[in-house]
Image (tube, rainbow, N blue to C red; front, side, top):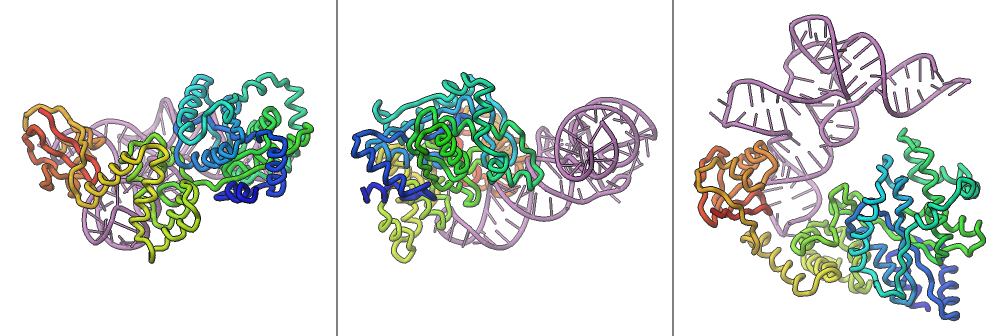
Length: 397
RNA sequence: GGGUCGGUGCCCGAGUGGUCAAAGGGGAUGGGCUGUAAACCCAUUAGCGCAAGCUUACGUUGGUUCGACUCCAACCCGGCCCA
């Protein structure tokens, strides 16, 4: 039991509260029943990235201890738009989009979660929210005061910064709390940005005569830029469906300071091992990072693929050689101006950009740097065009 | 409903009749240095054109003017104060 608690606490920010969790675990073990671990999915974005896997991995730990993951697809709530962490209101989505997103999401989450029947339950909150009458909603809303709602950080901040908060956004936490009632959750997982919502769930459950759920919050994973939270819209993310080479390269690009965080949240390596790895006296940071990248990758790809990505990375970036795979571009043999050639190969988005790249010395053709965008090039079969460090094309006549 | 301030490029933000494709910062990208780390230095940052230049762009639509991001009108959107 001690062991279990210790494992479950790893990487968490807070557990509300620990004693209750211990009691629940003990109670469940005694009664031989599974705890129901709730996690709300936000079906507004179809792709999941490592930031999501932090919470999913915690969910997996519960599953491995025998408990049941209850995933709630917030198909109803998504139509409102969650104000969480946003400095602006989110757009509302159509049911079709939401369903499409949810499907992709589940397929990707399956890489982390145990999807066997007795370990996973998937629900849509339309199931109970759509039936709700206005009267029932009013009764639900009567459980919380305005002042309590305004405690929420994102509301507070937005008010302070003169960013609008719409009335309907108040309903979101209430509905999410009601989800907990509907699925009788024992534990709810979420990022720290969900703390408020999830704690509301506790209150709502109590108000409806249920034992309150334990709330476990996980840190928000910092994105590749090392500053902001990992998110798709900021483009600082590593997607679980990223190509092996991309995934490896992206991990390699994080700063040294972020390694410990990534090791703790994204791998299962023991704490002592991690301490050793992030100590630059004991391990060269680059090696530690390679190990980090491989370990993360093995959750999504096999070892061979991970090794191959590492080798490729070394080849292209450390040794400056050509990558294994270079996209072919069909082109006619007519002489063509260098800037036009880049455009034709889709290596740059515009002619202006092409000229800029050439002038800045980013362009090499068959490893020869060119400096004048107006240089005439006579395409030859197999000619290699390189822009910057990572964009390549091979000409095909 | 009344008053008042405001809506500028990816973001923030300066600009009050021509010298504005629009200062400055952030971000991003390229180069240098490196471990595709950080830090630092340099450069670039609307589209088209070899170029001269042309075309789009400062909430929307009209107007004044040789000329408008800058002036006027109406409208849309937001903040704040009052009710």
